[in-house]
Length: 289
Image (cartoon, rainbow, N blue to C red):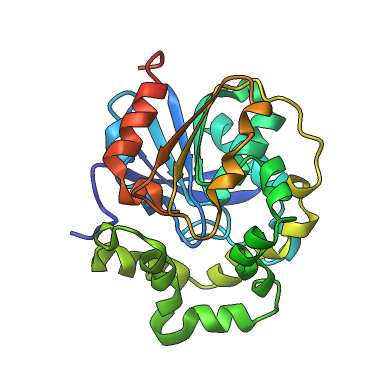
């Protein structure tokens, strides 16, 4: 059986004018999961069955990724569109609110969505993506600029696509295993699934367009107020792309904020330490389940 098959179902939803693929399992309140780069819904494979015991879990392929639509225009990959995608998914699934979970780019979208539509988020859970104000602040730090140098490389036309396809998409798998503390977190079948998703026609340019628009995005130039949504941040301390110091001071931006550090994990925290991540999420959601 393919690693993409499991106790979950594969479905599609039309939201904000794009067809989005998602995997779902369980019934109850909605828990919506947003992945990062260079991933797809599969990055939540250890969380979906766990939380399907109490929620209708929906793990989305973001626009441009895997089996979701990949609009051609670069202008389609801006935060305003991502936010409306999430809003449409919640509504089209018949809900008016959710527990929102995001990692990496999915975390950036989750932060921005919670600020834009706070009544639609019961609780916010963000993994290894700092508050947007802290991220913008970090980009003024030489050490973080060095860690984020790949963002500047991704601004180039066509060359990043060529590099990422090199040797059967080896750089995609290297990004996962190279950063990981626990190399065993990714089986060969897992890595093949990530390569297959990246190889979908138009996917590389679509996903890189997230980065190519980043300096025009509101996440870097916004006046951030105090977020009223209860928020949990989970942070793998061995993240080589985003320094732990980006988490410091987040409580100034969130009224009800909790953070859990995991020393033994990298940027791919929910895949490397799934049991601990699931435990921390369950503790945070104790009143919901």
